[in-house]
Every structure is written in structure tokens, then in C-alpha cells.
Length: 374
Ligand SMILES: Cc1cc2nc3c(=O)[nH]c(=O)nc-3n(C[C@H](O)[C@H](O)[C@H](O)COP(=O)(O)OP(=O)(O)OC[C@H]3O[C@@H](n4cnc5c(N)ncnc54)[C@H](O)[C@@H]3O)c2cc1C
Image (tube, rainbow, N blue to C red; front, side):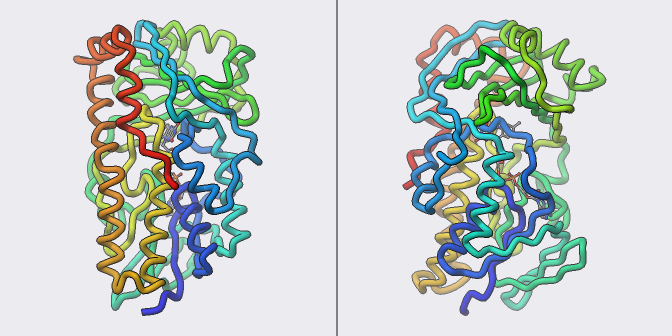
């Protein structure tokens, strides 16, 4: 079989990376994205540096976006006990508004076709996929990469297991202006019912992004109430909000954030990024993993194109093997961490343990991050 066309559903970090990688290798790529660029996304916007060499190898330099360099983590318990740790590899602060738009432009430049429509259906028969959009476009493809993020209409149509269950999490994000917040610092502050990350992005704004349980949120009418009554119980967050000025008219929110296990391949669609599994944001690694999964899927397809793999089964098995080797333990560690750090019964003890034994923090970070991706 010769590869005619590869369809990518979703133009977030995973989908755009795969589009750039495959199109740069002269394969015909069609990417569907339901939103228009640029756009803000609910995300902490701390990008682990592990992925930078790989992006450079695709001739993508994020230096053009002037991100901030981040090398220190502050962690605080619900009551405000704080520990600090240097981040061995560190990361950069860059908004999804700038980053995704930049990758989108790169994908177009490398020859990927972008269709700004919502995919509603993906079917597979006789070794070929058929893709349908809500705008009526129908397209056939030899491979489909599912890069449609945490939750999509496609998950429902593919009847994926996780979609049947209600998640206990929602997430909120906004940018703020704050004169004293340091460039090099990412802070993770716990509060009753969740945790909140703070870090700067390229334009000097501070990203404030938190994950909260519905249970704790529902007693409050709006994010503003919740911020004043629950987040601000942590003295570090209270002090931040006192001096910070909102840069967004309204907070962005997303519902039903699921951390459940997902299938990696569904009806022969290779799942990438969050569509394959979302790591808990406290690990600060989902963006790098999404980009890395775009690399893995692209390499598996290119190996087939270059006759190093001989059929679809080998492509699927190859991708699955690499993904599991790289990410399975990290996702599991993220789940365990979340359950001990946030679970109301254990949170007090575990958070205090970290504040008393600060040397634990670098070890925890290491277990949820990968090595540099060459
Ligand atoms: C609260 C929170 C904070 C986080 N903070 C961080 C952090 O600081 N650092 C970090 O590394 N990670 C963080 N993450 C994780 C990170 O945001 C994700 O792992 C990353 O965005 C995954 O990228 P993706 O490409 O898989 O999905 P996305 O970036 O979500 O992209 C999916 C794309 O698919 C499109 N789409 C969906 N359905 C369709 C359809 N049917 N048709 C066409 N297009 C479709 C969407 O519009 C979207 O553009 C955080 C996550 C959360 C929830």
C-alpha cells in the first residue's frame, strides 16, 4: 500500500506537530481543526524543555516567541506552608495563543492543508478511512491521527469507555498582570478542592490556571466567588490576587476533565496527546507529551512509508509499544500523585510531608518527566 493521504483530527500541539513532521517529509497531510487561530486554551502554559531539541530538529525555534525561562518551582500546602525546588531541566512559559498559532503557520508553510471544520465521524473499512465533517466535507485517508484533545464529539461516536463516566474535575484559566511575579518561577498552590498553577508567559502576563472538583465548586456561583472564598484561603494565592489585575474579560473554563485511562488505538485511529491520555496538570508535562506523541506517530507512519514496516498492524504495534514505554509509568505516577496530594483524607499529611522533606520534590518531578527528546 502506498500512502496517499494522512488525515489529522485536531490542531492542538499533538496534531500540529504531526502535521509539521509528516508534511516536512513530503507526505500529503490534511488537518481538521474546529477552532480558528489564534485562540486561548485552558492550560498552565509551562512547557518542559525536554521537547525543545526535537522541535529544533523540525526547524522550529520557539525563541521567536520570546518565551520566559523557568527554573524554579514553589509548592505550597493548603495552609500556605511553602517549599522551593530548582527544576533540573526547567521549562519555558509561552501562551497557547502564541505557540499554537506559530505551529499552525509552520504546518501551512510545510505544505499541510488545514480544513477549519468539525469532524463528526470517522469510519474505517477495506483499509481506508472516511471522514465526515459537520459542514458536509467528506474525505478519504489511508491513516487517521486522532489529536482531538481531552474530550470531543468523536469520543462519543467511537463509543470510547472514558466518555461514559462523569469526571469530578473542571478547570479554569485566565491571564493577570502582576508587577512582582518573577519570570523564572512556576508556583503550585494547593487549596481546598484543587490546586492552582502560576507562571509567566511571553508577553509578561501571569497565567493562572486551576483544577477544581465540582464538589467544591458547586457551592459558589461563579469563578470569581470561588477565587475569593476558596483559592484565597491559601495565603500565597490571596496575596497574588490582591495585587493582580485581570487581563482577560472573563475566565476560560472547561468541564469534565477526565484523567481515566484511554485506548491508544480505536478503530485503527492512532490517538495522540490528550486523546490518548491526559496526565495530571500538576506534573506540568502534558504539552511536551502531546508534542512527543506527534513525533512517535509520525515516525511510525514514515517507517511504513519507507518500507521499514510492512503493514498497518506493524505501524499500530510500533506506535503502541513506544507510547507505553515512554508514557505509561508517567501517567500512572501522575494519577497516584493526584490521589495522595488532593484526596481530602490524605492531602494534609502528604502536602505537609513534602513541606517538611523538600528534597522529595525533585524526585517526584523526575518521575513525571522524560529525558530530552532528541
Ligand atoms: C488545567 C490544566 C492545566 C494544564 N497545564 C499544563 C502545563 O502547564 N504544562 C503542560 O505541559 N501541560 C499542561 N496541561 C496539559 C496540556 O494542556 C495538554 O496535555 C495539551 O494541551 C494536549 O494537547 P493536544 O494536542 O492533545 O490537545 P489540545 O491542545 O486540546 O488540542 C485538541 C484540538 O482538537 C480540536 N478538536 C477537538 N475535536 C475536534 C473535532 N471533532 N474536529 C476538529 N477539531 C477538533 C480542538 O479544537 C483542539 O484545538 C494542562 C491541562 C489542564 C487541564
